[in-house]
Image 1 (cartoon, one colour):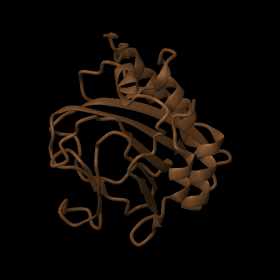
Image 2 (cartoon, one colour; image 1 turned 135 degrees about the vertical axis):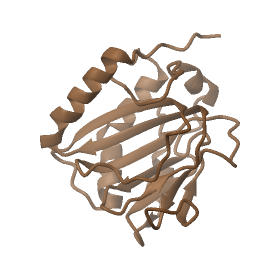
Image 3 (cartoon, rainbow, N blue to C red; image 1 turned 180 degrees about the vertical axis):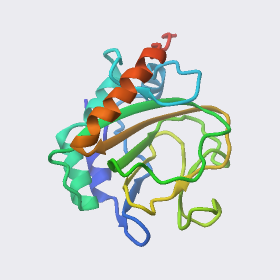
Image 4 (cartoon, rainbow, N blue to C red; image 1 turned 120 degrees about the vertical axis):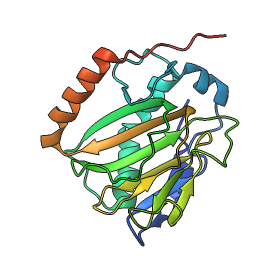
Length: 208
């Protein structure tokens, strides 16, 4: 069973006007029940990013493996016109948004590409949606708003003007973030997430 829908990903159009990105409304296949994936997501009740290294076997770990796999890497390379041959993959999970999260920013220049996949069922689309921005000081002047609802995926090339953010929101907000980073920055990212994992343990969700 494949979790990513490669056909939908391949059909996605790239917007290059401000910075290269593509968005897929449903990047996941219909071969499984969305609730099975959501129920397998770790029970994260605090803010911040949690490393995926300690995930137990299950659908979420399989999804991370597909995101980090060669087939998806080739899609990223082709669409965003980047070379990931020597890049290293770093994947983290978020389960809870704080009001301080979502401030307008660009990603670190140690990153080559950022991929965000949202896993929220019954999402209220009037709140907590990512906005890709035309400038660095106006959340309302956006190129595109990306819903945080289940299956929405956005991938963008990290540039000096890849501004993004979302309006203050506090509550449950499930997402997986994949970054490819330059080899010489990987140790720094790994150390950061090793320290992070010491304090932030991924608690498996209790099955009902």
